[in-house]
Length: 269
Image (cartoon, rainbow, N blue to C red; front, side):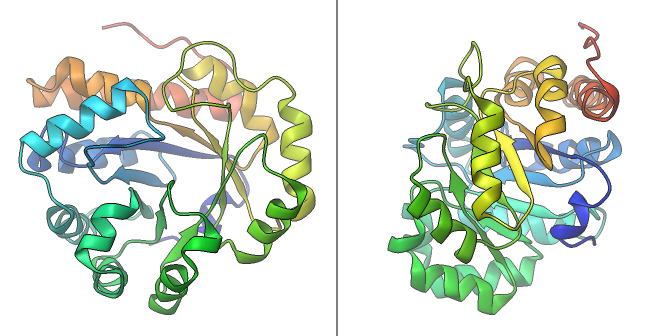
């Protein structure tokens, strides 16, 4: 399995996101394989949660579908453990603090490491309120990945640069995931400002909904995250697992091509 830093070496990494357990955990397994086959360098798996404050309607609905299907944090960790036999790209969990707190921070850090999780993103846990938890992750060999937003102060960027592990997730707009419209206007200045303080690779996500936007931002950063657009495919084709895998594979291939070589039009199904 490649390390987190390795995936950013020599190219801009493609980082797709799906919600684990959407529409059910059994369907998530072939979806992760399809993402890897289509060229994902690292895959984010969302932990379903009832009140995902950083996520827009598409991922909120995905979390609800997963919860209705019985997905739990225990089940997501077991899924990752099973996937490690076939999936060689790093798997990163993205989830909110409440389920982790209920599960137990120390237990979560140990079980995530045991399952083969490479990193964890917790959007509602800033570094200065989660020091003990991030230390537990680091001691277990799991990267605590921090986030930066366009309006973050210089002082907080300096602390993020000092404390972050693996890579830093840069939010590409002032808002939630899945928003339509443009990305943050002065993107180059924003990324340049983050780089002044952060020595790690930078991945950019939120609002990147297709090959055109992925291609546009790829030269600026070390990784491009695409989530809601893939989750909408899960919503549309979730009742037909084979069609779903085919659609996700085709869309991810188009993203891969766009990140590597320029905009590519996604073939509509």
